Length: 157
Length: 289
Image 1 (spheres, each protein chain N blue to C red):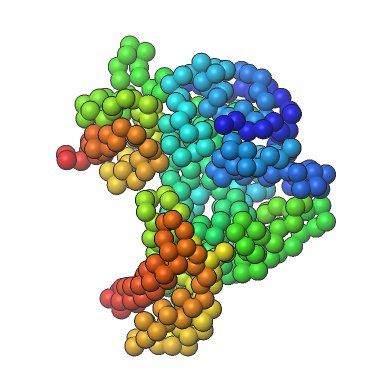
Image 2 (cartoon, rainbow over the protein chains, first blue to last red):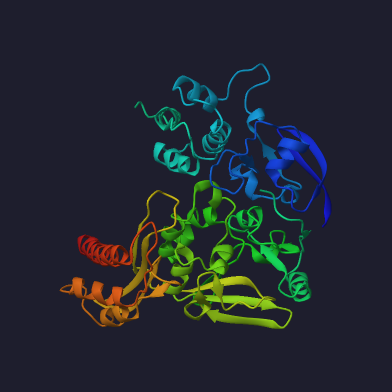
């Protein structure tokens, strides 16, 4: 069983750790680095709750080893709001549209929408709604989440 | 669940990967995108003692042109295939099929080589490789060989790869620029594996079909090539085809299974319908263009 030194950037801060090969990125972020906004639901890539942004792209952090993130730049939900507490547009849109109930799936959904809306091209509503298929909300509060996504794409609906 | 302990290595060269695989004697897993391997590890359905991560190998990245063919590096991410405008022109079938693989989030990590090597019978990319006539380049310490996709898939998750081999490239032959693409899949939800799926390419010259490659996914233990339908199409004029009869021929080359999602009969019935509809619509769109 191998152990590895890793150094990555999490929300703009350097994070260093010593991890076993089998350590998932989600467990590293939550347990070793303390970013408990990374929610771990199914731990095998089905639910989407653990989604974070790695080098600009939304990925499931339970489907990546921590050691694979060595040298990467990671953003978790803790890294989105401004230091003064001003919400990221995605967070604000979900709030305005009542796009959450219990909140367990929310950080993952926020990170998927943020990766796309902060990407090189403004996404269409269709793109955002399709990307939401990678998330499960067991409160089934999908309509509010979809409203928020449409609003982010500039759709009046 | 957490994976059982394993050693992790991330070699920088193909030779080092070959050496690890040779030494492991079947106890190694190759990690490409990890979107299937990681769940298998987490559920402890797979317990390799060493995981060989190929993501840091420069030579396995990227899409390149070889003579008369396009070579896809095994660690090219599925979302990079979707966003590749040159590929959309060269291999539209591959780009369209890749849009249906998993979810946006898994396609950001998931690779072409990973999906091709896994051989999930209901997955899009193995069937795409079979339909488009791709070859799979496999390397080991013993050397390099190319296996045509048609001969690569032996059963569910069973491929012609030996335990010490791994995929170093997928080579798609060129098709004429105005080749028609057939694609349709029926799935319960976006991102689910297909209950029934179909991918095909038809090259047309002066109104006649000169080349055809068609494969099913979710319709048998491997991607199922619709040989009889291909043979019936080649040489035919694109107008006045007996589409229903060709759909029946295409279904004759499947071995669908029944499970709690769909019965064998359902898969055959839906398969024939989507085949006829997709072929009909594609030819109609060509006529209109």
